[in-house]
Length: 496
Image (tube, rainbow, N blue to C red):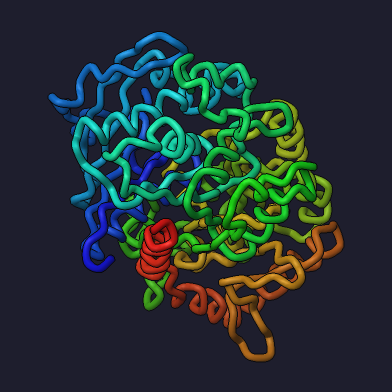
């Protein structure tokens, strides 16, 4: 197929409308990059309570009102609203069903931290709503690009419920795994909300995993192509899905057992210190004065004494990786002996908050902690810190380590042996590279990398060179979107 593709992107969250993590950034950036390449791109996402309808001008769509969706033998009515991604011509449709999506949090109660008990029904409804919306619009995409478990049922419905529907006869699916740890596994009783009694021939058992119903497995098994967000992570996904960790080989269900990889990019219209209105002072590679002003603003924000000569180690985390957080906690006394500031921004369960709270009290004037999700503070931390600590044991590509390079903040990254990394480690002999790495996920290797970074910070001339190495790197979505187009074309040609 040549020329323009019609691409539907299905995301559980899209920035700047709403965001809890990296996938929201992808939702707000990848569609724009594809649109700029000349393709017809549209997005569908839930309309959550926290989305500001007035600010983003969400409008009712007359032909997308009162759409009946069958859910467990009962009909529920959804509405669909529309807006544009800011600073773009990408149209976004919002599935509006207030009993499901007008909650305090997106996936979990903001007070208790517990996942909502009806998450299965919420995203069954969402997936059915996506396909019904396309039918109502009479818009037939060439590719539906699904992201994470929340949209994993869409390939399943297309290959079962809609298998013989000519409307979707030329529509193919790509399923992207951003976070394998979140699989959308539910009580098998939820299958009664997916298929009706008249659809008893639908092979719902194929999406059962470890005695549960897995929305992620549905996406893996029934999509035309599966990919992860970098080569290293695709290898981990393949390892997890082939049964070596879980005792069940999900990939055996697929004819194509390959897990492709496309690295996430960066939206430099959002993450750019020259343009960023969420930081204290803009700056550039040719004028770095603003970097120091952001450091001062960050320290003041956290109630810490301003001292330019002391390195600030920042950490952004949604605590998906308990092993990584345990590593930091176990090494904390050694970190403090290095004479650094440490600022943590993220979320965590009650036990972790208590533990980090005690660390905060014991190190008054040296440690800053904030458990809220504050996008402005996210930006200020990345701009104001000298070092960004990435202690995750997972090989998922975290965009934070790419954001920080643009801001002249140096990441410390877990870098497993034998893996390839798109960020080049700093090499003292060549002077190239912009990251400090540790290859063994253990206390000794981790502390060794931190000590090397802190020691290098003392040589401000060398540190400035490393900062500029990182700021010159280009990780824009332009490169990644081209690779996605190749995967879309592969979907289409493969199925033909």
